[in-house]
Length: 444
Image (spheres, rainbow, N blue to C red):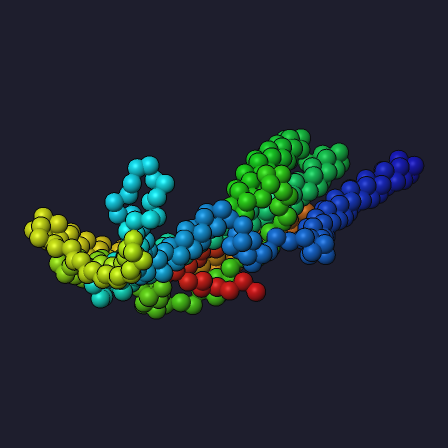
């Protein structure tokens, strides 16, 4: 009787201890996952509370005001505008003084006959207007170059910003997974201590954590390079801090049609406006070259003062004679006509290239938008469900630790791919804006 009582007393504590171990593991898992979610939520909300986000609209405004390439192109445009009025203005008049029969030494030079002459060269009517028109068209071409530089720099700023956006999101995901792996290490230690886990699970969790730490170091280096590039584009000091990014282009805003974008590019693309202005300038140049067959003339007026104090006035009209026209004027006309034909051919080639660039950029942006929507609506939610299922199965010892790690790694990779796709969409849309020549998405 005493033996049987002893067996009953020993059997009950064993069952109780097993049940307590199981409940301890479940409670630890639940607390770990809950604390991981709370920590991730706290990290995501902290920057919003501090208001220290890097806004894309602010960067674009700063680039317009500070980027050296934009400022240089703008000054070049201002210089071209300043050449318009001088090109349509008469040459400076000439004033001459002549002392007739000047004695030597020149003590009495003003006692003899003296002549004061003023002369003005007049271009044949229409020539100055053509010269002014050519300068204006050249200024328009330089202005289009300025717009080309501005769009390219803004595209580079957007691409750098979205590179930072991707790296920031990857760093956040890396931090969340490192926190989660710390909890996994604690869980595997508890299971191993209670006899329900294996030591290789602990080692595997530690290896995963070390790999995440290494990834965080590489991401930090990549962010430093992107921040340096952004500071260079904005003409900032090298050590200027770059806060976390927050803005992104919503793929749902991509509702454009290829035909409308192609038409907008033909009308707005700065390179096309540059070539159009150059073609018109060469056309005016050809008209001016034909007018060079017509001579210019000079009008002179002289005031003559004689030694006897008598005063006379003289007037003179002189013309240049283009008698060597077959060696000067005719080749100039041929050159201007050839330049005009070249400009028209280049303009048509650029139109064809613009259509191709718009279509290529449109398809890439459209594909990036579709990819983001697939990850957002299908792949990431499925990976989250897979991790939840693996967690529940691991809590009940239905799957091993490797299955849980694999589900966690899959979710991490899918989130990374989602944010990489979001950054890729922003970069592709920025390139599409450049090739179209207009801003498609307004940053509020």
